[in-house]
Length: 261
Image 1 (cartoon, rainbow, N blue to C red):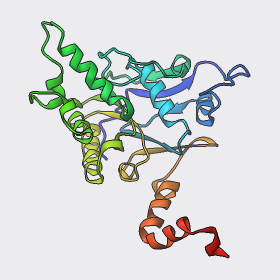
Image 2 (image 1 turned 180 degrees about the vertical axis):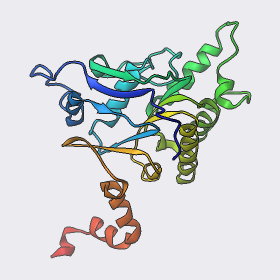
Image 3 (image 1 turned 90 degrees about the vertical axis):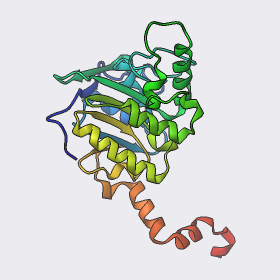
């Protein structure tokens, strides 16, 4: 993956103050959050966060997004709205070390609240304003709203039409609405945007996205945050085992207890 020289808008994140006995609540009980006390360097290009449910991937991406000026529910830095504040206060404890360059654009995408982002865009466009409507930027100039597209199509339109060069993009499980074919197409789009000076931090469960050459992969688990290789990821080993021997794996998984007697 060719990357513009350095290419980092965010170089490092670290907890502003140490975790104490008073921080006995979520998310400070998560090992990956506790690991931020030592600081975490982000790579140029793409940094993937991977781990089991509850490992802190989404929590970390959300906190970084809010600390960088994005709404907790997603969107661009200029889109300010909130339907139900549920984010943690981790962002207030983060020190974000920025690079020399400043992004020309950016977006925080979280699968669970992208519907709310589109609704907020529609509501803004419905208000009298001298500025051009926002939705055509997302639809590629087509009339109508992304609400009129399927979930996967709206995600894809966002990636193609709204994402541009030299942008900071924070994505939480972008594969949620994408077919395997579209995930591979998204991987190519991410590659091209990195070549044009972009930086991505992506929380994902997708072994397809994680296969992006040259990306940094960080595994979040009970040890905290550790660098990992693609071939050593538990999910990659799981998928490979299942695809190589689906009958055997399903036989073990679905076997009745009496069958082993």
